Image (cartoon, rainbow, N blue to C red; front, side, top):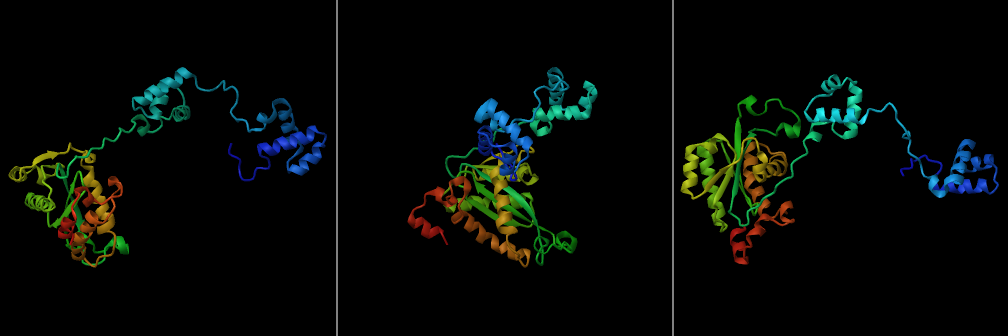
Length: 317
């Protein structure tokens, strides 16, 4: 039971009051003692006489009968029409009842919103057993700037393309098993840049002793280019593309981009985009070697490689 903050009587105090009245205390005196009116004293005393301690608990305010309540058959028809994606007004016209009645029925059945009609599908998480089994590639476009950006100052005047400063493209790569990431910034998102980044990423993982066998990308034009397919074949990689409009398939890269934006790109006020670019390798190193990862039980991505002491001294610069 949820007693409001100004309640004069709790169930225990109600019982105490009823017992005093039944023992001979005048109703007016009990009312003054417990800070309520005489009517309340008589009501609680009578309920205690009939039902004992259990009767001191608040009763539901819902009526015992609702003769004007919408019938079960009509309510089921309203719910059935709602499952067919009909709007409230459309259902009201089909059934001959008011929109308010339709709304009440759907609210009771928890079918008012579209998302109630389509329960979310269970998230299917996957992870390759060995590092290098698959790497995820993606690209994030960022506006270049020559002074502190509007995210810090709040002033959008003269920002990005309005002054002809242009854009730069952060190419990201993350290993499916270890979450070890590799990033670089290119002036565009064309196939030439994507191929150069892919080769650099494969070389980076090779320096850690990881052999890449598969690469997953979205359906961007640079990844659909024939030259990119040839580059994958030359590197011995199987190229897998996500289904259209399903970013959750490439979710590890999508999540990494959001983390990079929050902890690197927009984490501090850079004097210019060049300073932001120079800070990217520093942040990427921190992400791989020092940052606890939530999906790795608070371990760092590099811990998944089980490097020896000698390797750590060689690789950790």
